[in-house]
Each structure stands twice: as C-alpha cells, then as structure tokens.
Image 1 (cartoon, rainbow, N blue to C red):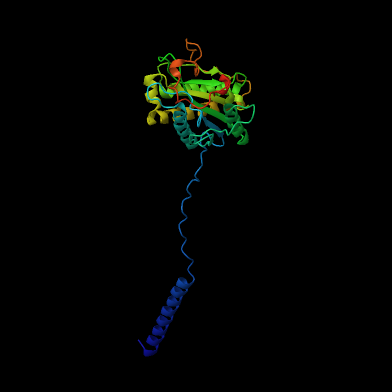
Image 2: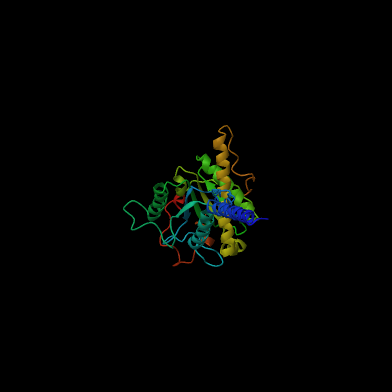
Amino acid sequence: MSHSLLARRLRLLTLLTVCLGCTLMLGLIFRPPAEEPVPALEPAAVEVPLPLSGLRILVDPGHGGYDGGARARDSGTWEKHINLAVALEVEKALTAQGAAVTLTRREDDDLCDDAPVGITKKRQDMERRVAMGEEMHADLVLSIHMNEYRDRRQSGPQVFYRKDNDAGRLLAGCMQEALINGLSPKQKRTALAGDYFILRLPVPSVLIECGFISNSEEEKLLLSTDYQARLGQAVAQGVISYRTLEARRSSDPAQSPPAASRYPPYSQPELRFCPSASASRPPRGQRPSARPARPRETR
C-alpha cells in the first residue's frame, strides 16, 4: 500500500473520530433533563364534624352558695356539691362531642346579691340563671340536681320537662333512656312534666334528678367520681340521641314525635324534692340561711 493512500485513510479515520466525539459531546450538552417522578397524591383529609358541633348548651349545677339544696342522709353532703361535681363531668363529656358549654356556676356560689325589696334571694338566683341562657342564646338547657325522698327505698334518675315544650319533652325522653341505658338503675322511671323555674326558657330544657341521695346505696354511687363520670357520659349520649331524632323530624315534618320514653311510668307517684319531710332536714344550725318561698322556685 502506498504511503499516500495510508495517509488519506488515517486522516479519514481521524475525521470520523472527531465527528463522533463532537456528536457525543453535543448529546451530553443538549440532553433534556431527566423527568422527576411525580409523587402520588394523597387523598385530602375529610374533617368529620363531631355529633354536637355548633350546639350551645347551658349546664346548670343546681343550688349553690347559701342554698345547699337537699342533704345526703348518711354522709351529710349537701346536694349543691354533688350537683357541681356532676355538672363538671357533663361539661367535659359534652365538650368532647363538640358542644359549646356554659355553666351557671363553677364554684360554691349563688347568683344573687342582697335581694331587692319584694324579691326573694332564691327567685333572684333563678332569674339570673335563666338570663344566662338568654344571653348566650342557648340551644339547650340542662339543670343538674339530686333527688331526695322520705322513703329511702326510692332510687333511680328522673328527668323533668316543661309540659308545653314538645322539643323539651323529646329531649327528656332521650335523656331518661340514656340514663337508664348508661347507669342500669334498679328503678327505671319515665320522663315527667314539671313546673320548674329553670325550664322557663323557650328552648328545649330539662331538669335531671341524677338519683336519690336519701337512698344509702345510691348516695355512695353519686359521691363516686367514677359514677359521676358515667353520669356525664350518659347525659352527653342523651343529647346526641335527641339531636339525631330532631334532625330526622326536621327532614320529615310529617313524622310524629316519639313518646317521652319507651319505659312505662313507674308505679309510684311523681317524686320530687320534699323539704317538708322531717327526715330530710339537716340538723338545726346547719341548714341553708334561706328556704325557697315556693316549690316551683326550688329548681
């Protein structure tokens, strides 16, 4: 092979090598960026409203301050202290379900000052409790009390409603049933109509007698923190049941309201706080400084 032919081939090989190198360099320079993997979209978290969201509830621990209420037969504990302990558990249970709760008192206080002329201290106290419900635009009112009767065998929770308030009657029925289901009392009562001052608000309102502090066995339960917590949960369940039924009624106006309670009336007459029973009165010198003027103002 001639020297000139070999030289041409070498030049051609060199040119091809240079072209290939340039092509590779251009490919590296102008290579499109690698596509990053697109992360999978996670489903958006759906916030489920709590059962009692948006509901404003006034919880009223009955009595307080100068007004001790009834007195437990064995321990001597005033009703006002048990009412407050249970009301705080009710507040805790309702708040956990989304309700906005206001208490009429958080300490051993009453809501009256030196009573004006012509107005008893008790009446002023009750009027201010009702006014609190009006000011907060309460959707529901729950007044917490303990029952007492001269017959110490009586026991079990009892719920009262205003007779001309249909929504209150429905709430009372739901509450009575929830208390029976949650506490399993020996005596299963039915919700009853009652003329109590705290029930005067036009919104659904109930007065809950949580049990009898004149009954030795039930008194021990009512003084127990565990039982007080169960009471709070049962009351919250009663409100949830009421709201569920009320929503159904609102969606179907033709639906008739259910009975106040599925349980038949108890055979005994309606039992309320009986201040006239001598056995229920505290020893002289240990009574509250004032007594209600009329039975309807005692609650």
